[in-house]
Image (cartoon, rainbow, N blue to C red; front, side, top):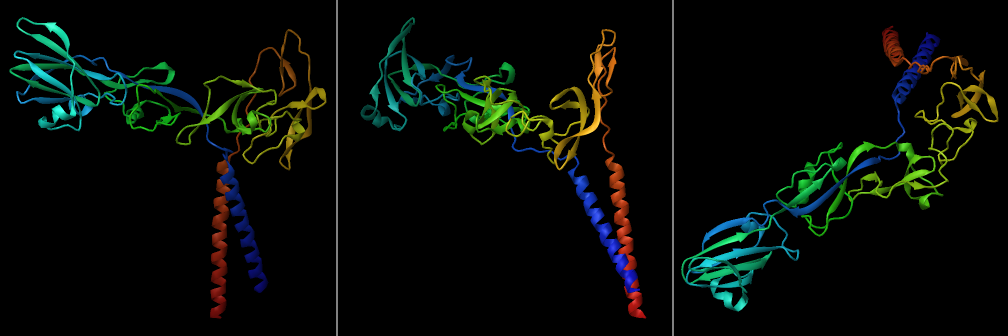
Length: 398
């Protein structure tokens, strides 16, 4: 009985290992080697520009006879414009019947009694001549205010600046100008990833008219095997290989998001002989014989069909994987010179054909069958363990 129980335990352990091994095998199906995430960019340009209604006439009504302040600020006017940029200003037009006085004041002045001490007398420009009076024009820099004290009835109009974000998106598409220059407005730009990543640092909440902002959006995920560091290219900095001998630098957005910097065009470097980890290319982008090709766990480097043999241009052979490296097999075909009647040579069959035929794809392994075998094994394991437990309990009863 002891010998029989030991055999059952051994059988159960073997089945358990089979289940674990089968599960591990299935978990590796579809495994992809991705070193870092890299994006091929779509650029976006954002500028703070004047809106179409900027500096249009706005009627501010009658002026209070005790005097009134008119702030040249976004909060007071209802229009956004920068208050720290030289040249941005409000224009005020005062029409008074008995005359008036006007001063340019800092925003800190709020009391009429402080105007003469803390403000500067405004220099009026003559505007339109009216029937019984004149129109006077005053210029006030953004972030300051105009104080007007009329002697009688007076009216005032203004030309208020208005700024918003002018966004040029992917493929040159221009969006409608927003009603302010807040950075938060650019998140509405459509992109494949739904994100906008600033290329340069922006320290303020609002974009300045003096400093347009460039951003990049995730248009297409790059191939991870093309993202490399090569000691003999670009000083070892991260690059993205586009083709043998050509690459782009890799840049980092302010939020750490990596993208291919295509702004300066492709760069040439003869040390890039091939695309790393593809068949016939090592991880240093150097061409190697197929016999030295490393095959990764994710399947990179695997070669299907017939391929050239180093030192022998007269035949093609299939390759096998031994210890994670390609090894030439004995399954070879002779390279032929095809006649005009059948000019296309099929490397899969070794025959000349009259029309080009796409090579058949290798049939995919049936993972369902493997899964079914693992499930059956697991059930058998559970049944055997239950039998062992039942035998042990019967033995104790005896």
